[in-house]
Amino acid sequence: MFRYSLILSSSLIVVACSGTPQLSVAPDLALPDTFVSAPETAGPQEPDWVSALGDEALPGLIGTALANNPNLAAARANTEAARALARAGQAPRLPSVDIGTTATTRPSGEVYSAGLDVSWQADVWGRISNQARASALGAEAAEADYAGAELSIAASVASTWFALTEARLQRELSERDVATRQRQLDIVERRFVRGVVRSSDVRTARSALASAQATLAIRQRAESQTARSLQTLLGAYPDGGIMPGTELPVLTPLPAPGTPATLIARRPDVVAAEFRLAAAGFSAEAARKALYPSLSLSASYSGQTADISDLFSPSTLVESLAASITAPIFRAGALRAERDRTAALARAQAASYVDTSLGALREVENALTADSLLASRVTALETAREEAQAALELVERQYASGVGTIFELIDAQTRLIQAEGQLITARRERIDNRIALHLAIAGPFSAAGFTPSQQ
Image (cartoon, rainbow, N blue to C red; front, side, top):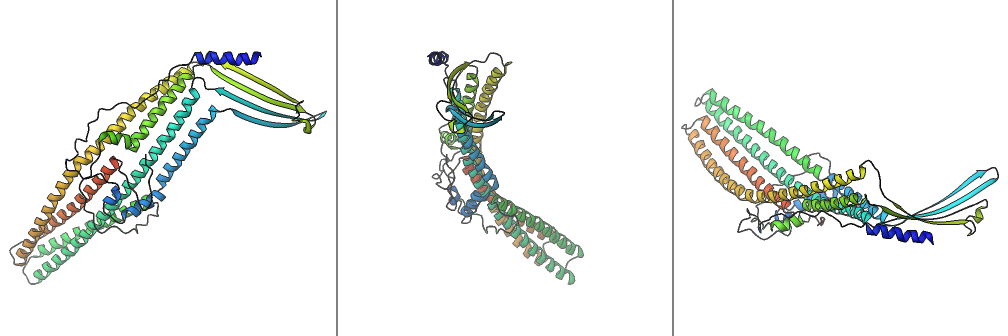
């Protein structure tokens, strides 16, 4: 009777000391109703930004990367580990049961013993529940990290694929430049044989051809390196054998980016930061409650006999039930230091959440602003290319008639090649910025039947 009275009184003492949770919540951010840089004429939100880019090969490439990319596989494994940790965090809330048997040889003969021990720590403060909740929120953060990793891999594949297409176009441009310089050299050499031009014209044309050949080698190297980068993202051997696209796609109108509030609620890295902030709050609360007394209950059944057949006989079993209250008295400040440490980590997580949120908003605003500026740059470079083409045709006619010089001819060809190269790069940069926008707003996508994780 005494032991049951002890259990009851212990429970009442512990419950009487119960405190109020002090958990961390995401700080409120002052957000505008719309993104400041969003154009008034934005198109509808893209239901699948990969398909909206208009490249038939891209969905299959992204699907391959999502299935085979090693970094994504590592993120998947980290998510599974976080889930397992969350399951383990639930275990202390339930009793633990252990059973064991032994056989001992003594001068008088064999002695057999067996025991069953059951123990349970009452979660009267909610400390164990706080720890379990922190582990569960850590798993939720890992899930959000994985969704973000999928989106990041998709964006990386898209960006690298179009970089490879640009590299091919730049290489083809250099090949045309080399062919043009060779034709120009042939013309100059024939005119030199006829005594129309000087030997310096021949050497100047040869120099221009050699420079174009050097540029071609650089662009061939860039194409092979970009191809290997893409193959690495796909989880394939980087032999450089992947075939690039033939053209850069024409972009559709800028899609509506949504609102800052929906971005904060949807973007995986912000969601993960919020989960980690909440987890830090539960961990800090558990550390605070570690300063309070704890109530433990234990029960055991044990028996010992020289005859193994009587080991589990009621006559040989001994029953015990115990309850204990322990309170920390002196730990050299370790528990209070842990309380202060976890509280400081929770404050750090709050600051990290704000920083992550502001970074996400900045990325969207930057991408929205850059879209119109890059579009203007593409338009200007298209004009520059057209004028350079017309100028080259004029100089070629002048040189053929003996009015123009070799320097004017080489300069006109150089200006045309530069204008075309810059236009290719500007078009790819605008596509890259559009991909960055979809990554920043955590736009939905699917690839080759692969449905990525969504938060």
